[in-house]
Length: 289
Image (cartoon, rainbow, N blue to C red; front, side):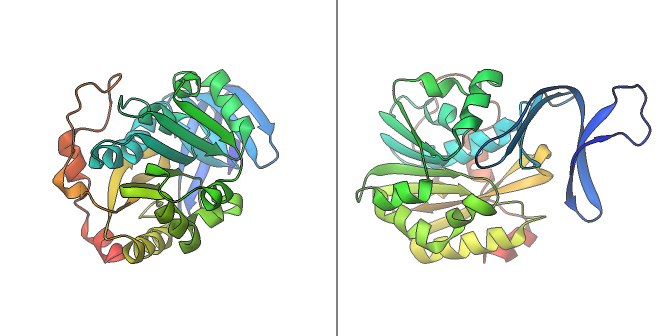
């Protein structure tokens, strides 16, 4: 895992970033130039310009986003739960240091405050510097950014504080491991207001089926309405899953509000896709049954 020379270089600068997803399968990006490489208190941070996918952010050797297909992740994590809720005014984001989730939340004019809790301030600074379009929400007056531990923040938050909670975490390794536990999700339910909605990233159904199974099972216990849904993110190796829990509105009914008035132009989410994403392939249905 990491930056390696191509097997048969065509030029002296033929450098590739290669990430294995399984013992016999991997993805790779040809690098045009390295933009940043450094180590924060929590993780290794690398960002490079690729030939085909634009800028690529990598944390601890795992691809977090590419400019070309980040819309498939951020828009689906955010807009399906945000449009499930009738009028979310206060939103909590756990993680999401690159700013993409915050940007999408703040497209909704009904949002009065979006609180983002990110443990690694260096990721936010790298995004501000090199991914300004992604990090645009950091300068929005409705955004409150807290540098700290998301689990502690939720544990100390008052009951019924937020309409929507979004967990934009890395894989369940190291500091993010606790973000996939029942104890954390139970605290999230407590912090949700009446008819509140939570959505979390729940891993690759192809390469991390155990993560999706675990999250889906916990949400079934905690929420009267729960479901998993999919998006396509090629940089993540194929389909990616999200899991939603609701204290009232049912995402299967489709968007509760029209998209008119939403700030900016979406590249992925549509009202039709809102419902279609809930239709799961059989192998994924078997994981979450």
